[in-house]
Length: 519
Image (cartoon, rainbow, N blue to C red; front, side):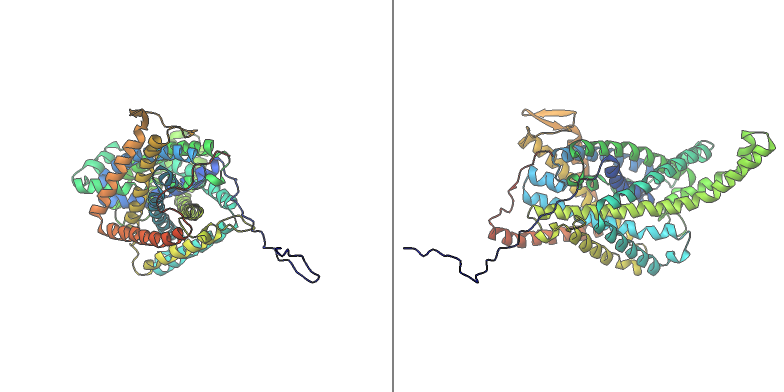
């Protein structure tokens, strides 16, 4: 007879503690998503305009315009993908389900490079604008220390919670958009309209038009201006009704970004020559929007404007005083708002990379530790702290080389363009492999191939981003070798992690999960 165990006096029964898994809170709507995305893309004009002008010269507005068209393709692709796959992860999730785990990891790893560089370059370009108040921030050591302090500050904010950081974003974003609109309107009225020939001369005059190679490189670098689509896509798990609100946020971003960027670039070349715009020492390459504000303030003639408005002496005195005050305060506003929007961009990068790491970890592509959510604040605190430390390490060259942000720009383009190309390819693959998958937001303008609807915007987006990426790795050796080294390290780590996955009988390439239904 088999022995049947019976408890005896004094016996103690040990039961393992049940582990409670915390989920991210759904607190974001369209304003919160827009602030996250615009915080990334809107900030780039504060430094990328000068970077593009370094190579594109007078063709800077044209380079930005072409890159803007590609941005529309990117945003539309992500609108369909984020509404279809609401768990977050962006292009990494699209590629994993459209192809396999390996391609999804490649996309996510490239995106991690972009996020880290976004945090570094945005934080590093805050001090030049604040140097308007504290000239010591023009010194490399003081500037770099301040940038690292920004990273520490945002690390603490994001550990506390996404809702608090998104509220901070929305406040600055609203003021920043209003200020940029004012700059564009005043630039058109005071600079462009009185002297329209100046813009044509600065764009097409002798010595202002770039070579063909520089024009192509300028278009590639202009992609630095049109980011933010991935930042939004990482927050599907924290968005209320993501299948509706995420596409709405993307459409709003397209309209606002294209209008403002077109106006800013045209006003910039109306206010200064491309040589001055692209000069990092005596010009405005590092703070181009401050250069626009300076030109606008110099173009304001209080007495003349007041006299044209009224002939009453008292009215003229009041208008003159107000215009004098506005002329003096405009550079101050730009310095403050540029710093604010760059702070938001740094924050958007941190939000994106921490949520990406969380998503990849939950898909068994990164260690499970990175998906651990804080029991009180409900945030992925471990990747937040980890990548803030990595970003501060990346900022160390700032102590010795104040112009290293130019290399950061080309390195960012390497990762982001590769990610965008894979996102377009994944959306096309999902249309072929899973045509019946629910798509709350479905792209139009489809081409029928073997009874499959393939969106034209995704096809054009894939071709354009792939071509620009090839240009970058061909022309920019620093971006090429650093980016390829980063990808090589990622593949090695993925293969090592494969040994762990084999022990759990998880596949190397096959996606083990399917899209879940919308909540």
